[in-house]
Image (cartoon, rainbow, N blue to C red):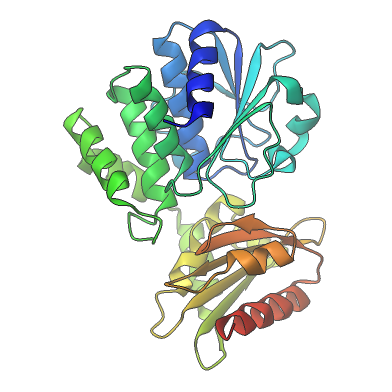
Length: 319
């Protein structure tokens, strides 16, 4: 058992008024692991707040949350727990309200600098949700009800439905324990998957239709401009997961997705299969993540960012 996990379990059992944080523009792991920790604290009879710089994405609004989701950092708290954050800036505007001396970090990203007073970083975990599940079981809290549901969402979204290389035997064994604890798999997956709007379908159709292939078809790239989002009536949330579909093209080993931000900077997402390490590429641009799934942001314009990132990923294939 990792020593940081023991320390975290002790603090959560002894202290109160916990601020549960996750990275802005949260994905399924950030939402699921944060909500799961809230369920743990609720069962311990603790006061807590789920806070994030971004509103709750609509696609996760159906989930069983242990309390409201707020975009405001509580004025007074005992400890803050940052989940699924590769570094402090990923907390967004809330970072400036966090006291590093009262910050716990639970994360699974490569390159995490350990920006808290207590840092539990396990890069072998498939998701932060998997780590929160271990914490729950250490505290003898059964993985039932909303807790199991939130953990499942965290795991299934961060492993690409258990298809990414980060999926370990332990990951699938945990999923089985959650099912045995009563999770309705059919209902949960239907709610998780069947959340698309017609606008999102049109966005994906246009973006995927504009995909380009490079390096002999081994690298696929897509780009999303602010104009495209405005014209299709879509948002950042509708882009979630799009990059993974680039890998569906036969022969593509690495995928690049670039999205123009309102300030004209560019958010990028990189995905790969097998031994292709896109984390090193992301790190060279100040980003981070995992071997097969990484991201970050760079200066614009959009077409220049797409070109330089695609070139860097292509060069990594030969290294």
